Image (cartoon, rainbow, N blue to C red; front, top):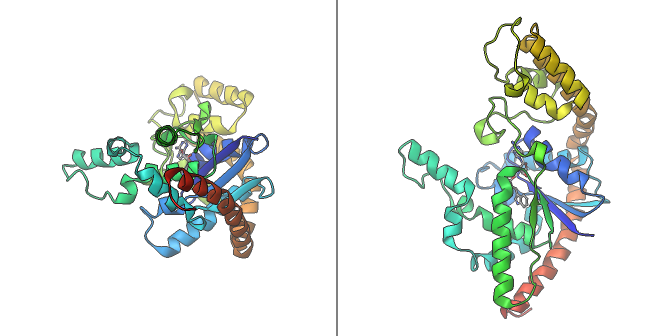
Length: 331
Ligand code: TYM
């Protein structure tokens, strides 16, 4: 079987973007592929500086994977920080990574552009973790002989950088030491929008967390921005944030039915949002029950993560031996 791998940062509660962009596509691959899914806590460290937040968010991501259907018997689930080999590989990769490539990496470039737009020094608020982010991510991927990486569109460039670095290592040593990975991006879910219509992202403060009490979920959905058309006016579903979220939850027949109500007029924004809320609840409430039970059972989560981490290390150390040997290091 080929290998599928992806990671999620514990920077907050996993949201719709994480679910539709990565978790759901990744779980659909667990039958055909050998799946390795992890919690990218070292990546989160760039922004999460409070230990209690790190702990809580790590459990939240672990419980989310499991509540969404990850079965630890079929798929490996582990914490990035349980595999110190990640850093050793990252050090090897550094020596094959052009600085110019880091200058072009999205996350860093976006931060520089934001700084420049507000007339600040370009590198304000940029730590070395953010600058070298793609190298650590490449280590995550290359350590496990990954063939495919199911991710949202925002991560595509990182996987391309990973492939570039791996190629230059293989080329230098003249053998296939690292497997060249490829990003898999689901077409209909490549960029999920948030409550304000921009890409759903914790840094834009526009996320809808997957698992929260129904009342809170309803409140969040009522916050989705719409235009100021009156109830009786005919509305265009294709330009509406509520409808674009609804599409993620509804089958074609349900989408056509709601689209017809938009076009007929008489459907207010409150009604459209209520439809969205009900479809969200139908999909997520069974998973939320599982999540609520799991999040209380930290002993179980610890056990699952520990076992996953041990298995992950075994795979990781064989990659490390391979690269040490190729590079002329004792092994
Ligand atoms: P993170 O934690 O920001 O996001 C986790 C996954 O969710 C996807 N995603 C989205 N997809 C569609 N629409 C959105 N609005 C949206 N928001 C988030 C992301 O594309 C991602 O797939 N660098 C990664 C974590 C990581 C990783 C890795 C991933 C570290 N090492 C190795 C794959 C392989 C990140 O920041 O994800």
